[in-house]
Length: 362
Image: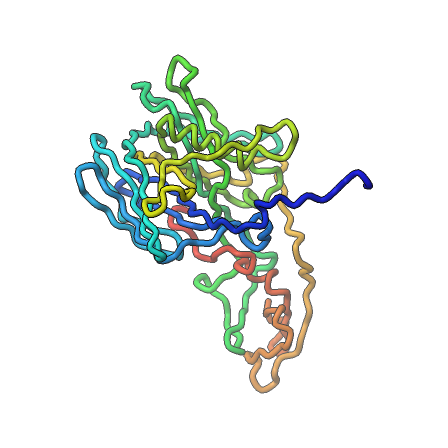
């Protein structure tokens, strides 16, 4: 221990608050374009990884002069109506922050993304999900994917009664809290290239890995994969970003590299801005995986003690509920005068973050 000395890099003490722009100009009749604006935080900040940039004005300008405006909803996330972009034009992103800063991206072409041939999966203990695609015209060559995954899960107990404002009511299909659905977005940078191949074919590009016995396929799981074509410059940018953010931690990893994006500050040309705007059509495909399709997949929730307790009800009105420990909730009636209770997380699946509203595609 005597040969070790703590080192605090000077950079970790400075809050640079760089503007970060993340998003794609989606040429799609079904999907709006989404741009996320945020500011970097200090390396020593353990409470958050970024802060949203609120109150900005965001628009897209075509080389012919047409302009599409974005609306902020929620804070720091800016959405457009579904855009119809011209493949013969180029487009740039324009941002004016609430503080008066003006930013513009370079003009970028609109890439045409070939359809996804298939999304496949296979199980070798864990489940690996892959994408397959090809471009007969050999024009795409550079690809990026992201996804949204959704899974169904349940509470430990399927209760028959619940409480609201101190009164017990009987649970029905519209008020059930046993079945929930939770969703999550991809966080890894998923890239593929066919430049070194004689044909523009992507076979089994890895998209997601689900560990064995994960709750995600405890009942039923769905993944919606979106595919984008990139320019060579965009591919190189995201490749550097991937190395800088995902492949660090050992002495054998690549050294961090300076990121050079295609978005610049108009008001202060020397200001560092993080982000790379691309424009392309979007191809997507959804698949489902059910638990009964897997081998030896056993999910067990061990997050809470779900032992039951019994209490006597108000003799004047058995529907009155006033148990003082708010971490408990009604489960079912043992008799007209006695009720069984359980921890809320054991009878209400939404306590763990999901929603009781079944997705329309389920």
